[in-house]
Image (tube, rainbow, N blue to C red; front, top):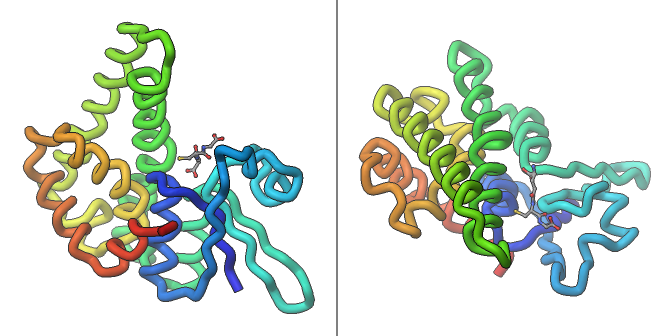
Length: 203
Ligand SMILES: N[C@@H](CCC(=O)N[C@@H](CS)C(=O)NCC(=O)O)C(=O)O
């Protein structure tokens, strides 16, 4: 059985969308961040920096597999299932946009949130820097989606899952008005029943 340790955030939603898309059976453990559960010794044994999402999977022979970070979770289960990661010509583009979602789009969106919303003291330089950088990423996604249906090409893949939750947050905030291709793609992904279920985890 797979246990998904998560919280309602874009990084957590990447993992729950993936598990829903693959139809894998899993139980959800909603981390109590307010109580510091993600910094407990038990959770640090699964996710060494106390970050979510993470997965613990009971394997035959009493062994537990742990995976931490949305990227590792997406890649691992897509490879195991032989789905959502093309093996042919689209693999390179899929991996590039997958990585873009994990290491560019996600971290910059989180940093903008920290400086623009969370920071007790608002620093205009930092807010402008992250807002401009994030805009640059939305523009890159928009150009790519002007030439292909999905980020990897003709097929829906882990590249789309790696980017979608952060794009959905931007769309809800009314920040995608100039990116028609990105809006078209967001609506297409949002229609998927597995995406709708994954975005509702944890309840
Ligand atoms: N690179 C990681 C980033 C994970 C991350 O930053 N998770 C945030 C939630 S979106 C978190 O764990 N926040 C709680 C904390 O930092 O204590 C991934 O893609 O999963």
